[in-house]
Length: 305
Image (cartoon, rainbow, N blue to C red; front, side, top):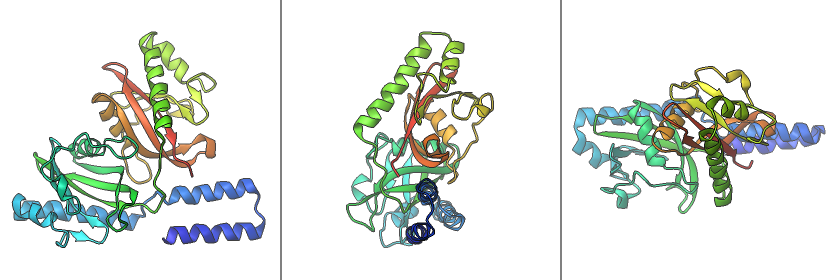
């Protein structure tokens, strides 16, 4: 709420000062992108809450912990924060606000933009811990689906748990048509790569004026070790190992996309500079696909702001 009030107040000041329309738009764009970023205190509190829950499992045992986590009035429901638990096969073990999910295999569950949220979070948990975005109903606002940043940890060899914070932004909606167009764009690039040499394909993908760059939609490519093979908008990254790259919320998007590609491809969210908005950060939905056993490629589209 504070972020929203600040943005409105700032816009009023800009108008009074007579700032140019271009400067105004760029400044507001920066404020809007900042609304996607969890401040350090909120992030630390989220991490501490999830670690506390993991330690509770270790100290009290799995059965007692799950009973507490499933209680909407229990010790691990604190305002917007609550614990969810899944095994590594995709079965829901705890969710205080969605009891109908308990005992069900939800590994292929997708959010409103086609993101396989449980599968993506599981891959993060396999690495030990980390952040992931998805859209989910907010129990504080019945019927409203909102963007959530969740921190997950591996509890033991059989299960993982997490909790998230709803971000103060409008639900990012990517239409079916825009997602279908994105998938077609990526598949076209993949087909091109499979029907020519890798060298020729990467040269085409790195050509900022070529057919694989369309406004702020472009093809990027990596090998499975994390080396950037194609990035027409930020060519300085080509040849670098970018596997540990994180967005402003700590989401390790290259690791996430590499795992997606290894498992057949799919959609994922992250924050990334938007070339159509003077490289200010935008919320991006990307689709990735495996080319062969050595490399993968993808592309993305940005949410309206």
